[in-house]
Amino acid sequence: LNWNLFRRLSLNSNTTWQAGKDKDGNNLPVMPPLKSINTLSYQADHWHFFAEAVGAATQNKVSPFYGETRTPGFFIMNAGIDKMIAIQRQQIRLSLACHNIFNRYYYEHTNVIKLPEEGRNFVLHVTYNF
Image 1 (cartoon, rainbow, N blue to C red):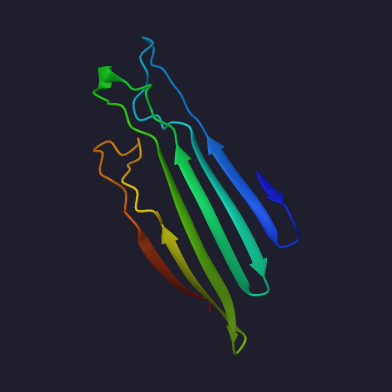
Image 2 (image 1 turned 90 degrees about the vertical axis):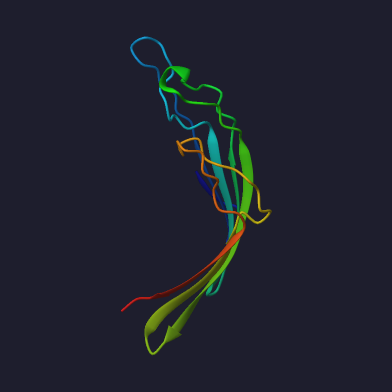
């Protein structure tokens, strides 16, 4: 869902949930829990700012039959900024983002070997369209 709260401010929310059982009534493996990604964006001239909250519930509906184990829930925050620059009729986008701002230890349920996701990290993008 996307809401334009004000002329330059918007909120996007994407929430998903899946469940499944096999023919014997066992929970299917690798079914992600309830997860929600909510992004608040502000657009000003050639600047774009965003703050994002990502959360997933604990996955207790696991399949021991298939060797699956429970996964704890998590909540992380991301934020970023980007700027469009015109140079001789060419567009360049500079973006800087910080993912997992509070450096939370977590892993996604669909990661079957339970490797942790990245801690706090910064991403710099330069996009040049030609």
